[in-house]
Image 1 (cartoon, rainbow, N blue to C red):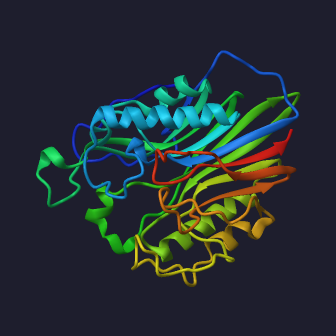
Image 2 (cartoon, rainbow, N blue to C red):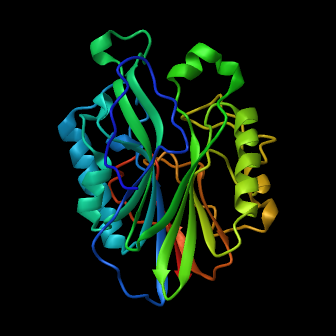
Image 3 (cartoon, rainbow, N blue to C red):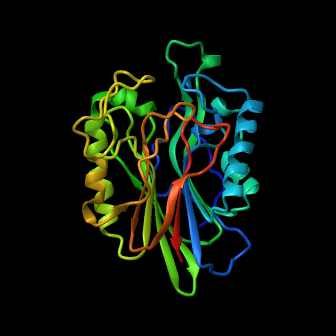
Length: 316
């Protein structure tokens, strides 16, 4: 079933379910090519490279950042793009439907969207007056593709228990977005788009176990990409980051858990965050049952998000 939008909750928040995944179908069905390029990017809801996101952003600034993001993706020749932090009709980002905007700007018309945050009002920052709070929120994860979507699923991830019930009511509902694409000639590719917990390592490790179980159930070719909010085991340092001196990744085995079913990391450990002065890699590419021909960072000369974009090229 294809739907562009459903009614927003009149009061409070809406807890997304497995049905809150929306498929958008393009008209084209491209011929198979020898190579397939998959990109991943946390686009920071069009807020740009700033790390100060606890506010609303002018619509014109968001639109300018989205144009840059679309240009980078279009020029990269990406066939499939997994995006995190995609706003739709949200006050914090000028009520721009970022999914539709990027479908138009990249030409990747086949798409799937999974809701992670849907609230009539998010009172954040809690100390700010209402006109400066996030307010109306609809946000999530998206996969844009040259190839049609055969199947899509939303797998809910548990929220941090230590947040408490009241806080979690207004907190985002993270998920794994699973999309199966039709590559033609009877071939498919499973894409797992993730955005794991950022602020609670114990919760992130719990989410990693749930993700690992999903990945182990994937029998055909697949990629798992996104913002894992964790480091590789060979990272040069796990603490002492200039932008977040309190952050400590020691003992975090998130990636190792995710790879326990035979999935492998693609690419080197080039840093992806924060985009203007990167000092760690939070975004990763995992592959299974595919031949990798190259992987790295996409060129974003004037950072348009707080994360840098990744790509992996696969033999098709």
